[in-house]
Length: 305
Image (cartoon, rainbow, N blue to C red):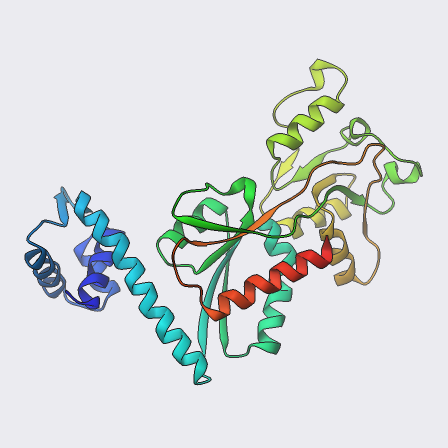
């Protein structure tokens, strides 16, 4: 058994196709088939079930694939550490949910460019479920996401980051701000509400603030989008209100050099927090670039809290 055979097995189980797996590892299809057969012969057990046109791992195959991924990642970590020690470029593949991306991605890229130029950073943004799937396939080194979107499997390690305070955010000259007094959630709900999504706690808080039962329902959002900068653009040009982390206001205004958006002052403060986590595969050795990125995110969120 060798690392090449293990990488061939992982490629086959991820693609389900000998042809696609052979293309991924730059082998001919017969050569890949011989590699898998040799591995099965050494173990004396079948690792792959041929189910119609798709090839799926047997229960033992699943066991071997999981440990093969770990072994391949450990070897990659060794090579990364050696390259970093010699001053050669190394990579960090980091997935970010919408909230963390809006707050941290630009600053993290500048931080790496200025202070860690040997790191080749690849940021991938998308829904948390898709990012975690890529993390489990070892296509990403870590994922930064809101904890409410993370399916906390036993195979994942969550490093909680400093929480942020959510806020209702609108144009600085919004009709509610012209009132020059604290407003209620009920008053805010008279205007279109936009967000990346509402937690069950926030939905419950909004329903409690609405006096009549007819106004209470599960979906309070007029618009839902994963892209926070786009939502803030909409808010800056309309009477819509964005519900999200208040730190987004500072960043948006700073980029435009003037006060475009501002948080609404509520008559009852929101007793909720937006909590993010830095997610890695449990038991996997963390690379130095990943540690640097994690600490940057922690310090930045701490200063924004």
